[in-house]
Amino acid sequence: MARLPRLTLPGYPHHVIQRGNNRQTIFASAADYQTLLDLLDENAEKFGVAIHAYVLMSNHFHLLATPQTADGLPLMMQAVGRRYVRHFNDDQKRTGTLWEGRYKSTLIQTERYLLACMAYIDLNPVRAALVAQARDYPWSSHGHYTGQRTDKLITPHGLVWELGNTPFAREAAYAELVQSGISPVQQAALTDSALRGWALGEPDFVADLQKRTPRRVAKGTAGRPYSIKKT
Image (tube, rainbow, N blue to C red):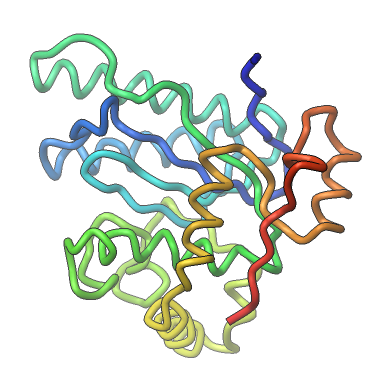
């Protein structure tokens, strides 16, 4: 069966996952983590992609990003991926592939899943038992949203501004949202939708998306879009 093209539409938030080949380590030092962030910052601006959230893990990374154009996200990921591999291979005196094929992604319904996806991304290091709290992990956007630091890579989504009327109120509300966590159902839906490339949203949202692209956005009659209760 032919592989479906990625589901990429401008103006929608996309959850992106890029893994190391055979789940191998893709960061060998703090400098490597920073290099990838610098490449993302440079190319997000170049290709018109707003990055709302990220986490860099030892063998993969997640992004939540909204492209302004249909090819902005693929071009950004291609440029970042190629340049980072050159950097890593040169630094480690190695050759060959680093990534596990092409990156995985799909778009999500903003009102229903954007904040949940941000919490999901922030909680990756906690689920991996690397830290006890999301705020303790240095290579994610969590610190930006909780007032620990300013991250030039991040463009907050409009929904974040609705969390409070002041920076302090927004930071406290966001910290509480992440601390509350997400359910196993939410976690599975966010992971599977990105890996499988099916849109994550309510039936009306998915139906509207299908009118905007010839590419199938859901499994069709054999399956149903994920639906998650708000927490």
